[in-house]
Length: 259
Image (tube, rainbow, N blue to C red; front, side, top):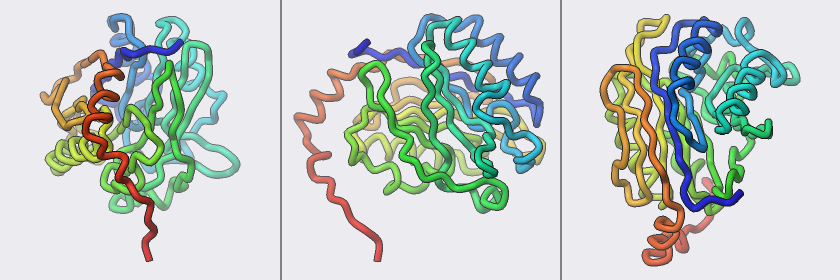
């Protein structure tokens, strides 16, 4: 079903370190209270936190967490998306998984693994575009460190919504705020950033700042406090398209290659 208005909810919570069962229980408490919505978004590695114990905590696409997502998507009649650790063909990925109520699955493997934390040593770099259509909206999905590389997210594909899920630490949160806004402006699309709160097993602190921006870089919804919370917003596609037609900035995108 094509929709001009798309309702999105994002759950910002304190991910319990390397505890899949506890994290799913925490999320379920939020899901039980979530109002009717089209999409529910969760942070990066929402079942474990940003762990480098990739092999120990990896699952396959038919395992417990994806099946859990299917069950809740069907129960709530809402698509659910977030990143988890997935093992496939002897490789392990930090994978954004998007499950619809009809059990259709889309996914994106993080392209820019975070070398500062040695993520590149434990997770395979992804290569798929991470762009799909849902309810008439073209959606582009990205994960955390991808946010620092604008060329990879350049809107050459006329997508409507750009999603970043993350474990973005307090020390660099100003970059998160600024880069999300920049991605919205340069791509003339709605941009959603979903971050976690709390302190992880490596003693890294996360301040939230889950935020939604419109196609002009205006902040339209946010949860900047350090506490767990849920934010939601109804996005208007017609309004965005009208602005694109007026300003035509995307018409001037040119493809280029680094030498």
